[in-house]
Length: 267
Image (cartoon, rainbow, N blue to C red):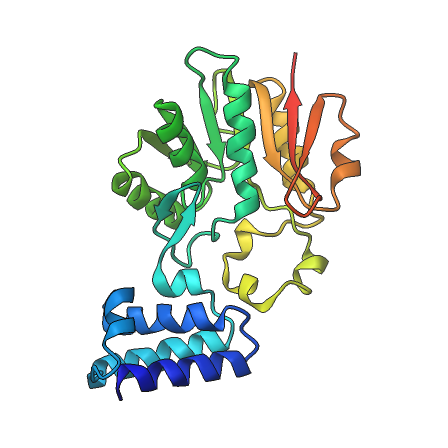
């Protein structure tokens, strides 16, 4: 099978499978299968795929047809201008989570050398991005050792100064810091059933908690004695819940106009 035939098959199959990004995904799968770059794949239509390359292409196509995320196929996702290694042990970084970075940068201006904790770091995208942009050491925690292993790969790859700790929420923290930032699980169990199929390939523990607000509530209660600011990503329907806290400073809306980031100030 030649590249031009492979691209045709990939594009047709993905389109028929209702993959919205079928054209881009077809090229990504071809690149991953052949380990060639965009330029090669688009300028060498008569390149003959080897058996191993064809077999890999078919395996990846089968996965994508089942809505397996393209970020896991290419083990990569861009976040705030940095390229992160991504695998099934971590959530795929999303554009709306970049709002956490923006609000943390705004708040951090208040401090000369801010002490920042990232809770539930996953791929490390928040902690690493903040460390790079602020040129400071960040402490990042996660309950999952496998997620931390992925985050460490990213910290090394991007040469970021991040200390990783395996811990549940803020139970490890013994002294006050300036800012705590977190993208916690905030989807309730019933809502999870209605999510898009590709999301269900991501680690469940990083997505859901019993009622959607359980971990957010836990973080607020823990953080009030441990930091000046708490910056949390929330679900689109959790505005009224966070507004019940007098410590809520403001809400930031995402690109769809939905409440996405809650900023709390204590003391």
